[in-house]
Amino acid sequence: MRNMTGATKSEVLIGLVIAGAIGVGVWSLVLIEHKDQASSGLGAAYQYDVSSLAYIDPDLILYDALPLVIETGYLNARSVCVDHRGQVFVAGDQTVRVFKQDGNLIRTLMSPGPSYCVTVAPDDRVFVGKKDHVDVFGPDYKLETAWPSLGQDAVITSLAVTGTQVFAADAGHREVVVYDLTGQVVTRFGQASDDQGFDGIIVPSAYFDLVLSQDGLLRVVNPGRLRVDAFTPEGQYEFPWGKPGNDIAGFCGCCNPCALAVLPDGGFVTAEKGLMRVKVYNSDGGFEGVVAGPVELQVRIEPKICRTPDECRANALDVAVDQAGDIYVLDTEHAQIRVFSKRKTND
Amino acid sequence: MTQDKPDKEPMGRRKFLKEGMWGACLAGLGATAGLTARHESHANLVWQIDPQVCIQCGKCATHCVLDESAVKCVQSYAICGYCDLCYGYLKPEPPALDTGAENELCPTGAIIRTFVEDPYFDYTIDESLCIGCAKCVKACAINGNGSLYLQVRHDRCVNCNECSIAAACPSGAFKRVSAAQPYLLKEME
Image 1 (cartoon, rainbow over the protein chains, first blue to last red):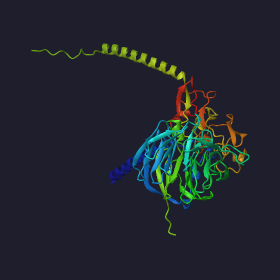
Image 2 (cartoon, chains in turn green, purple):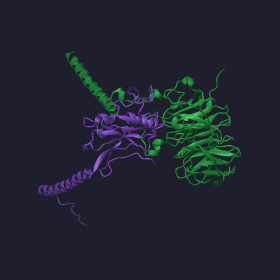
Image 3 (tube, chains in turn purple, yellow):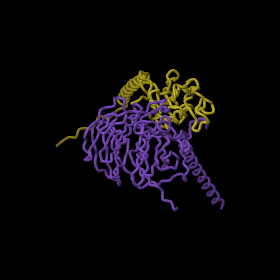
Image 4 (tube, rainbow over the protein chains, first blue to last red):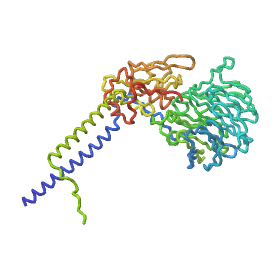
């Protein structure tokens, strides 16, 4: 009996020692892991909390992501537009790729130089912004002509076209250039003008978008002032809308909104870079709701490790709308397009 | 009939010691040459932060062997947007867009904001106040153009052989660079 008790005691002791050793081992691993990821030791005053900025009230989200994701295949995807047939045009690298709505690549439009933006006229001619000039492709998608350069500092970041005019947003010169359909420059505007009560377009970095709205006015992003300005096609300043701010109705960060598109009902879609948000506003510029935030766009807003400076900067969005009102969001970092459709309500 | 050659002469104790000594001498010479070369190469290298790899963790402020970190925030004036609503300078929801301390993001007030012309403001770093915490760098990287970034200032850095910050850096942003080009500057493309 005494022997059995002694044996039991020693077994218990050995068990305790082994359990203790395992415990110490696990604790050490946890400690090492924790130490590796430990914060700097600085207090809360030295931390920059991104999560609170990125939070979006779910009740404000009016759109759902469709399961389709279009992989553009570009290293540098820059701009998206959708034509009246529902074909998706994406400018990136040195080309423009045309996709069907199911994401299948139909064709590639090639011309020398980097492609920055693209728009399609009602007659199916395709206008491509090639940094400092515009290339024009015919309805057969063959290159017809290259318009003269706007100068080596020009950076054409957006195009819009009517039956008689083409509007180019030149971020390099911080102005809108108006062409006729033969490529002749008709006028330029965007500079501050006391006569018009306009304080000028400010473009801190190459995010400068414009669209033609259904009221016949041109809506031009004024990214340095975090607002959108309305002009007549002749360049007369009309009115602004939008305000700076991290709140959901405002435009935050540097150079926002970075992209703009028109909805079939005359409203607008805006995209913001940095704290990535896609939102809808009514035709008067009143905030209506959210299409997607960082969660829905599946993007991180923490700083990342980049291989090149371009990679660090390629974290913007572009937006386009098709005739059904679905919103195409180009994530330039991942060169993907996500499609969002208005949420069906039971009302 | 073939006769097998003996494989090798058996190794005697004297021969073992003799050859061992030669081997040790050669290894010693090699090690000395290697260490000398390493010392020489390190003498021409200094520590620096690769701004593309830095994730603004804040450890530069706390892991330097110096009381005041050798890492400071620097400004790339070519990249800066000179914005009125500067996220590197202002708190996320500032009560006002001005230089009031209650609006400033930097906990030590190390960024100086100066009006240039409407709507531009110039932002410079007061290095005597900057502790290298990277709070402004992170805000600028997320919301702005990323013109603010951290660099090891070589008028302060003592160039330790084993840099304490490099050992703690979670992203591997610390690297040795040529002393002839001791800064990894952010520039416009």
